[in-house]
Image (cartoon, rainbow, N blue to C red; front, top):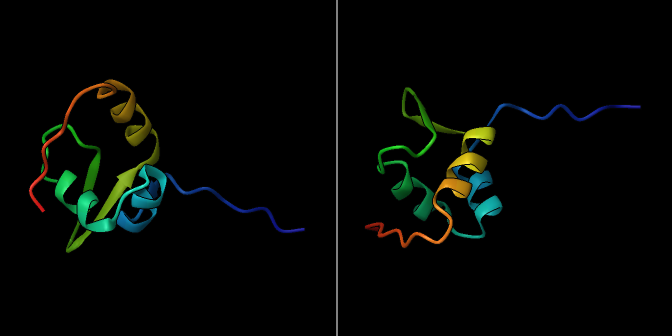
Length: 67
C-alpha cells in the first residue's frame, strides 16, 4: 500500500484549483503583500497552511488583482 505524501507547498495550478480560479489569477495574487508565496528561482510555490490562513483572513474582503 502506498501512502500519498502531502507536500507543504503547492504550485500555482494546484492553488488555483483549491481556490476555484485560474493559475493566471494566482500569479497575480502572488504580487499582493501578505499572500503566502515562496519564490524559488523562477518558480512560485504557495504554502498550503499559509493559503488557508490567508483565505480566512480575507473572507468578505474584495480583492482587486490586475491580470
